[in-house]
Length: 115
Image (cartoon, rainbow, N blue to C red; front, side, top):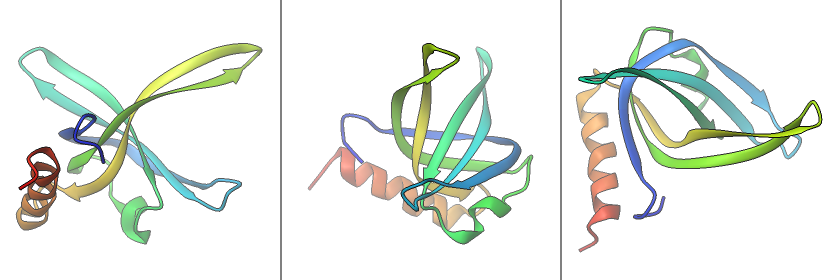
């Protein structure tokens, strides 16, 4: 995780996480979270590479905290180039596990302000 590209999100998991294995053998879990603030709600796509086995078991409607980075990827479909901006998760924690959330935030803060 880079100190110049870091995101921390807290939101509600929308739908069940989708897991698939890439040709390289890497496991990818994709899901969306909805965040709410004064401006309304935003849907944020999240990808998580090689997550723990329990990642796909987080039920829809669960509030989670995500620490990661933002990326924009390009792909071809139907003869046209398209893009998608998404969060690449380093860590996803169920929000009611306060100690785990605190650890994830402390690790992110350590990257932002090295000693």
